[in-house]
Image (cartoon, rainbow, N blue to C red; front, side, top):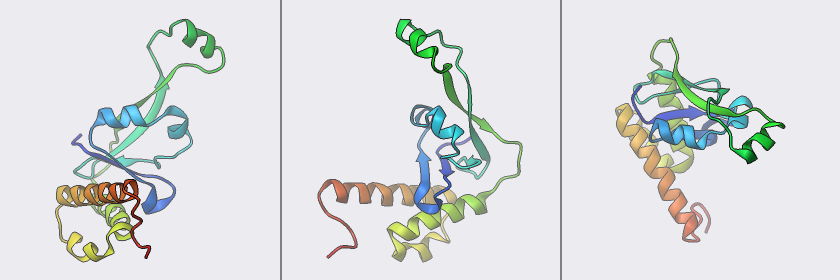
Length: 143
């Protein structure tokens, strides 16, 4: 699987998650959210290969606190698995362009002709630009 990984949650284009690495996905995605379907039924790698986040029992041995908490809930962890499905570059492209349309609508026409790697990079940049504006007290779209 080729990074980054893209997941489209049930909320549509605004619920798009891009993880630069598999490790980022594993450290950010929490078992309850994965079980609740917050990352959709599957996502894609950078080539459009379908991948899925799954929850499995953790082989890690808990410490004392973990043992006490384990009485309430078993130890779980998230894993990324490739699915044995055909590539879906059109679906990942549609999800990325949908997200871009909400951030930088003027770039959508250009984005439609971009390669998938460039499109992912553009959407990541647009998301980061929006976060930077908000951190600086600027709210795009407001006068």
